[in-house]
Length: 509
Image (cartoon, rainbow, N blue to C red; front, side, top):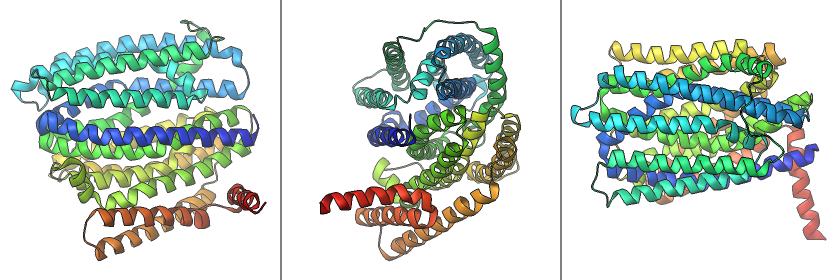
């Protein structure tokens, strides 16, 4: 595949993923509002707490998915298609073991620890039922990882997007059905969502089998490949666990110290920040397979081009939606939820800031994964995640307010960027000075410009839909202009100039 065709594929996949994101984001806004309305604040907070516990048991799933996609992408880059069946079969074997182990660990937690959480006695039965349903969803998703990883490595993003949109639509329909159901709404919601998850997984499996008939979709116990995968995965597992502890563990700690009301406010903020991360992740997902394949093919120049340009575009995309949201958060939450939980606005703003900081290290992190030299990186990142959640706990224990649930992660997000750059310098000869001077500092300058303009508009005009639209439009235009003139270098501008010149010549002709 030529560089031009590869770039076109990235552009096509990015467009597909953003169409998916636009539709699913719109649906998710309605979903969150209706869920809060149907369940009420306490049950919404309870649902968030139980779900966060189960998510913590899915940490191995995340590391396995990352590893499997990496092995698929490297093999595709090296053009050794025959090895894909061996990789798939071995990963399915490992995931079956992971599913059994996850089930045992989750059930032990349910027996010994669930009752000790800050859950009202009258809702304990519902919490236990929802927990068991969530475990079933976890197991189904674990077994689906090899199929989904293959589709992502093969860049079948348009087909995955259709299924994602269908899943989001079905979840919204389920919420409307709850208005007319008199049974326990929390339990009913969990059951119906499990049905949707099961359908989604079956369709992903069917799609992979139909598209790649040359691949044998059978369990394989290849000892050599198992050893290679486990060596790679073992260094990811603790990091994924630490990451989940940092995000979902904070939910539990907030619950223990402040109860379900603050949990609900944090849950709203976490949902919004996750949508913002998804906005940037759609672009990132379309680049990562190409970055991995470039490393597998030994084309390190292209890998670095994708790393640098990918980081720049990802940050600009985040600024386009982050600046209006940060300055209009109170208005947006009122418009969205009617009566949002108290403190949700501040929580959301802080988590959005944290999501923007995380944007800088993503492609560096993935490039190190491509090299396979991840030991130092994973150790440093793991320590940062565990220290983050530990400091949150200590802050609460010694009387700090609940906003420290986000203050502390922001500090550690900054630290994590430094740690990942240092480890990348050793693993892939990463040029930290170039990255800081040409990307980080320039991105900060753009952020200040955009924030200053937004602040001026907010100060000058009272809150209403017209001010929101004005900030959004001006911010979008400024982000694109500043990104082009301040962030992109001459080589990165050249393809854009060529497209513009071609359009001008076509119209002139």
